Image (cartoon, rainbow over all chains, first blue to last red; front, side, top):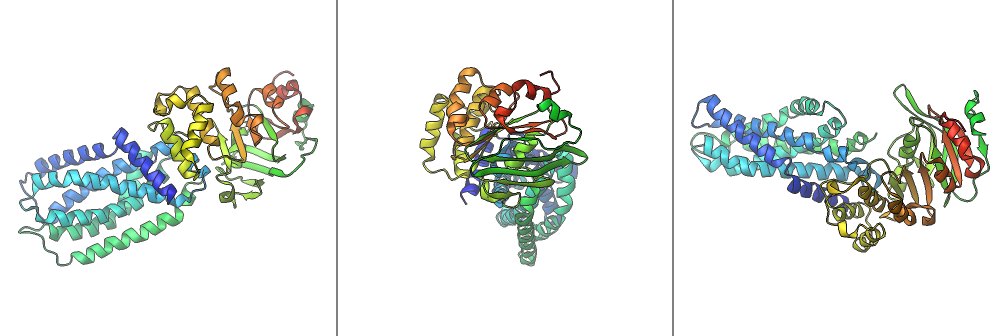
Length: 222
Length: 252
């Protein structure tokens, strides 16, 4: 627990000091919204189209953070330092996943009001949507940390991460879009059928969280 | 002596003198390959607790690979190694936290301050009385006034002094020192001496290209030839600096 807290606190402090991930993700999201706004030529969105816009934006913005997740460990020797300590490697996995969820939650705190302002007539679905996105974030983080650990040693990291990450996140996209669509329906949120998709998201989070926890030690081997 | 052994086409392990006392590190026919490239081949030696082993050899002879295996950071592909009573890599978890490593990289985060870096490592190693220990170490290397400085703003020599503090922060039993005095001027090298030098009293494995100095501070010597084969293994007193230089392909 001490190692988990130390690694998480270190990551958040470095992010606060360098502002390398969250501002880049937020700028990316805002730019993407503007592009969608003009590309779709619609003043408001609802249902599946609105769900697709917000989820695709979050997913692509997440790639920016996933790409950078282990750069400091790789370039500044953090992997070796952590492996020299009597630390369960899973602490690194969990700390990185929680850091990524934090970055994504911060992104959404900035992006959801912008999304509502640019696309929604009715903001009532935004709060439950934030809950769905948090569940999606956990899945993105579980897979993102694994993919980032695989990609960080490669020169083609920025190619490998999206190529591995996006296919693995298709189930998250399907379930999150399924849950978000009725929440963003015209005329206000409809909660029928949302529970089924939320259960699927939770199952995905649990499965990939367990896989990551189990295999993470092997990914750190030289 | 060494030059003869290097020239030996048999590639047999040369030994001079025996290790005395409790064995802290034991390597048996150790080897490591990276794909087709063999970095380390059939390396065997023993090092008693409290003794110092000098690891010498030209670039590409596998010195850093050996240090990383002993540090539990790299798995051997051949042979076995035992560190502080634990077989590696299977029981690596038993010795992590008992080893201090000073390597080519300082293992410090550039966007954290000196004090934040050491506090981070003290939390990983669960160091008791961490604040006092950090203050004591920084005072020893005269970096206490730089405690609040970001590591990215330090010179290479200053970062190396902090790296030495990091390596001994958790009071390790075994020090693995890969060119530990690189970047250090003579004054700074003298500062770190009580922490990582012979007077620390710790079991040490020292990799150095300064053959004379390395042999002078060591009990045992391991000279690796290009290709990672052992050219000499035995007491440090049994190899002269001239002989060791011959293993580098130079004249004695």
